[in-house]
Length: 328
Image (cartoon, rainbow, N blue to C red; front, side, top):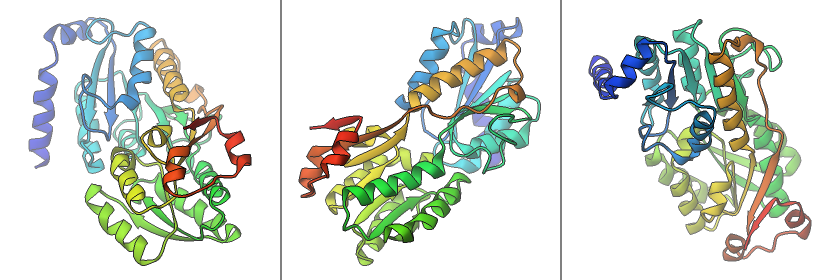
């Protein structure tokens, strides 16, 4: 199976325009992009648009001034080691990663090819870098400050709905950033008078059972951690929450614009833009070990009043006045 998958990857690589490969041999840099999300460079998830648009703004045009290989694990992070091997076979000059399992696989696969995180969880806590200021090694990039944001989301949910006492937590526990977030939530939950029910979500097929378990335990709130598998299935999660009338807070604003109650997020577009700048700096000679990990400079609260009305909630005015965006 593994040989077959690598063979398929090789065949996909051959499908790239021959001119692009010819140009690479003449010194055009090659970027290998590893992602959990299904798709290709032409049909990629829109959440990566800022990163690729920023590369283009910096003069990196696929097939002309750079060769970009967009390799997807198609929702299965155990495929990342094979994808890393493919990146190395293609002689990538730099690897960009959009999820921690991809970053860890890349770091295990090479200590020389630079690796740029476009917006990952906690690179220090997951062992990817030595420190925020001096990452060391060949990994650098952007951090989402994930555990801290998870705690803030739980606090905001409690502020929005003070009666919340039992919260369903959806988390992809195989991702190294998930246990860090769950541990942070566990530490703060007692002080908020909240009991957590954690359910491991490995695929969309696990969602129905997780929500059934939550209803059996009489949960009255929902929070999800920030792993890629949950982002991929965010629409389904939102549908379950609406159907079961669960007040929920999410990691990304798009989930509120799609009908969710609240979201508290880092400025992900800013991080993606800065990750493209790091790619540019490294391709121009900078060392990853000399580029400090960047964290978000702005955190934003989004509230959907239509969703609140559907849930029969009257949100505190103090919360509404702090919101960066209120959707009527």
